[in-house]
Image (tube, rainbow, N blue to C red; front, top):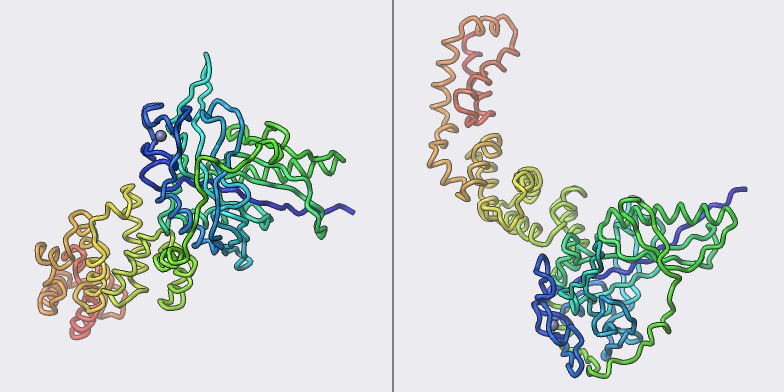
Length: 480
Ligand SMILES: [Zn+2]
């Protein structure tokens, strides 16, 4: 009988904290696209005789992130040196947290097709990043701008069993870190990357297989592909009677394969010891309580609330809670329109659609939440037709940032829901088309569509369509 294998996946996520300065010095924490080595100092270059100083803002952001991931924050934690030699590490060691991290034992929920799944988080700790090496034809170039960048490392439990679950987990972590403002997680700027621990075992067996680590994945797509590749590679190896060796592998995005880099190092290889230049960290209870109060409603809770309170569909709520500023924009607009459902529909289809088309972010959007809310209010009060709102008025609002009322006034659109004006226009069109009126009289009532079309054309789509229908039926009815 053929053995069925189960994959076991744990993820280590590195996220750059969004602080002004680096982890242990005053260098700028924004090194993206900067001239190499311009963003460095004696401390992050590890000059002898210099002393690191803990970035308070970084500790705060790490603790807030940890709280959002339901982690426990012990009163005491400390920094440790992780020693290794590599040209990207000028100090000769990385400052990390080894046995007493700033937080541990958390969890998050992910939403899969089969339902909600809880994924355990072993720990979240702080560390500083290394520099960047570029291997060029003539030699290797070192850029230490990133050296000392503050990172959070979030280590999950081996709770995931497919690439879909791993990607859903990584996306949820990204969303949460952005919501609480601890990291921007912009993967194009190298602010978030993943290491995978992956092994397979015959289904039903409790014992773990030998795990392989795949390091430095910098997109959700490569995370998914690397997992799929490893599942296939390991399954084939085991089926051929090979033994999986514990090792670190790298992902080649072009070839679409993982390649062996080195056999897995043990913790003792790093000769960890407490960082002698930094004091232990103490987290006061009052401070933690204060941070907790400032954590916004998180994406999963928000989504659930939108579905229950506002009767939004799963998809509508998912889109709106993707980013915090989007959710807040929606909530603001919905309080004004008093119609959350229609506001959600307008935001998702019209507003986000227009922004997408123009490659703009919500921050660049000229329409304010107030004005979007008021536009929907005008539709619901019958002041403007849905078509007009979605067409001309919305486009003008998007381009100018003016309110719907200002645009209606400026373009003289208001009269088009004026019954008298529409009746006069309808009479004129009827008078001009006696042959079609004849057809209507002979029972071909579908020709009413022709008159509606004429009315909409003459009013440039501004007429209230319901009103047009009613007026035409009345006038044409009187003819028969
Ligand atoms: Zn520095």
